[in-house]
Image (cartoon, rainbow, N blue to C red; front, side):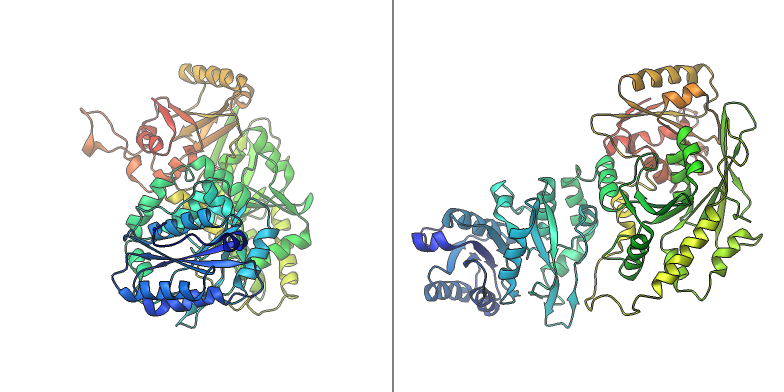
Length: 609
């Protein structure tokens, strides 16, 4: 604290519960308004404005701060420091507040050109006091000054979403515990995104945010500002931000967040009314909603995709079909294959059939017609919007015809020990019934848009996809990590129980016996030997095919030897996503896998060749 600024008397120090830190640099004409909005607060705990003159060359800034402090002793404090940037000024104010106010419970960073509604701190402090201790900050809606725009930041807090985009303004009320844990703004980040970094630091310490609706935060945004300049430099700043918070972006951490905050699949089964939300189809669902709650949730998401998460993939299947895939270890792979195909298809239909050979499993494409008898039907969640509003469901019903209207991809999964018709074929009928139920529920809802505020954020249904994309990953295998157990991937070009495969099988069995989670990955084959021993040894069995994985790059042959071209293709991102959830990967003679090893190392997977 500068020696020219006396410590407030003990009475003032004992009363202040909220410190509003106001960095000041240039724009002295707006500073008085910001300070005045703090002094005008009504009904809340005692609050003080801590103005930090960040070495502003305009003398009017210092005169305004000092004059306001003299006029309001114990309520306004004026500090001055050498210019260090916005983060340094905020940190100076935070340090002063911690030293000066023993009763301090919360802090708020208010830029000098913004203002607060008179009841802001009253409402915000009451909400923060009532929130669980893990809620470290309350972030507001944003009402702009100078432009007729009002934005909502509503919906449940999502760290996954915060990793993809910043929707928590620096103007958020934070608990003192955040800064007591050593949290500060990064003073090296003078070009922008320092507030985004601050909230990611808080999340790294285990805190979460919470939305404060209609808070009364008044934000001044002009065509040219620090924010505008930061947006122009966004790619560079974003790269640095992600590098700093690489731990939060590790694939296994993202899988945990996806399961908790944005489940990838909504599962509908004829035997179980309602909807199950899940990431890992081999595990229990994260949530189960009855039919009424499920339709309300889906409709709410369709009406406000930025606020409510809509599972990106809807799955309709009888439990018997899913149980067969789980028993053979193929359910995660089948879901992954379908998700990748839903990029250029609207519907993926799967038929389960007996294998022609004993102990053989296969996945193959079928003609895109008549999916009515399929055991599993998957479609994009976004398709529900059109289906719920359409005059009829002819588009959907045409799936059972020879010329379906939706863009359809069909697959057959052949499994050993399966009898024809074992799985049942009720998926299509259940899909039609659920869509009809959703359409009936929609007729009872208003056609008006929920809320009057705009939403600047991206839709929530692809937030996980965007977060994975920062590491160059495409479709990621839906494998939920288990605390204390590591996943080990064996990658092979085929699996026919020859000499190499038998050695791998024994290694996998030994690892599983010691608590590991072994997984088999076969790149370039649609048929594999899947004996009872293999099903016992491997937790999951995964096939990748038809993605250019067998192509060679002869133009860059190494000493005349064949080199894989796979690592250069777009499909390689999906292959990386298939393997990204592993702790370690062993490549046994798979040429396309060699092209992926360096990139797997880059995301924290240990590789062995």
